[in-house]
Image 1 (spheres, rainbow, N blue to C red):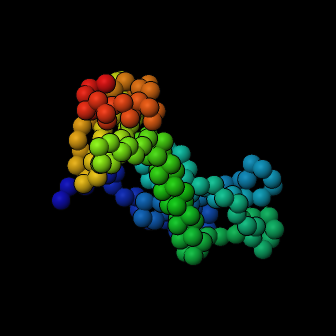
Image 2 (image 1 turned 90 degrees about the horizontal axis):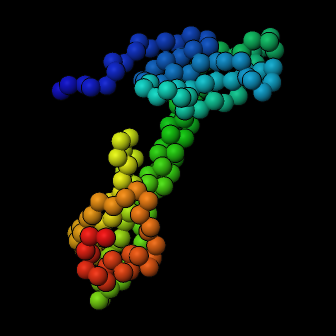
Image 3 (image 1 turned 90 degrees about the vertical axis):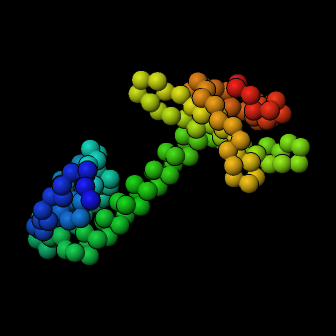
Length: 160
């Protein structure tokens, strides 16, 4: 089985830097105040998934050292943040309307395709049995309204 991902980096468990299972957590100076923050990154992503405040150690000057429960909590929280933003991005890329016509329901979708060279969209209709009835490539600025979707369904799903 070939692995096309970047090879996993070795685990590190230092007081201010942990790396394990494709995630890293690094203590950084908090830009907002005199304290500390933790930057959580997922391997392969250019931006941190999460930046969160971190506590001072006993000397009230240096950061508290990492431990396994803190690392696990940060990774769980960062994973949830990434999942939520992926869902929001997917929702922003697809618009859906339910249209009734001649006793059947159709879900009409406009799905954006953010191609770097030729951004476009697909207009599709799925019947109440889950079958794709029609699918057409349309311009990315295609006007998707209830009136347009109704007219398209009533017109027999011809190419817009």
